[in-house]
Image (cartoon, rainbow, N blue to C red):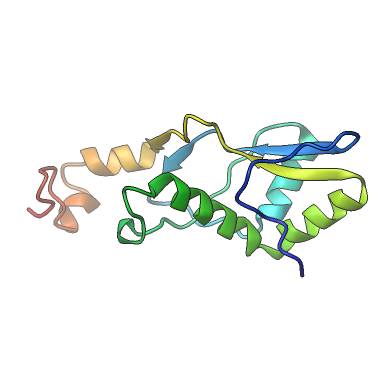
Length: 142
């Protein structure tokens, strides 16, 4: 199977139709299960014309370097898509229809926010944060 995902700017070709997947933001959650099929979620979003959400496991901060954080983050996203057989199948189907599927990431970067469940966890006084011995201070241990 040919690797269709490349980490490079798209060179638009005259006469080619494009289906862009726009990464608009990232929300950090603690209670979401990973999306089992990125391809099916993306296909559904294109069919309904509505934005969708996918959930993926977090990357350990030790795996990312500060100097290459954005580049490595983008590579993580590409890797996540390229390992999904339903997504690869979707890309192949769209190519047969004459469409090129592209992944668009804002030049200014992808904003990262905490999800509501994460905020609730951090602000809890007697919940799981305390049971896991996670303090609100910078040292991280109660």
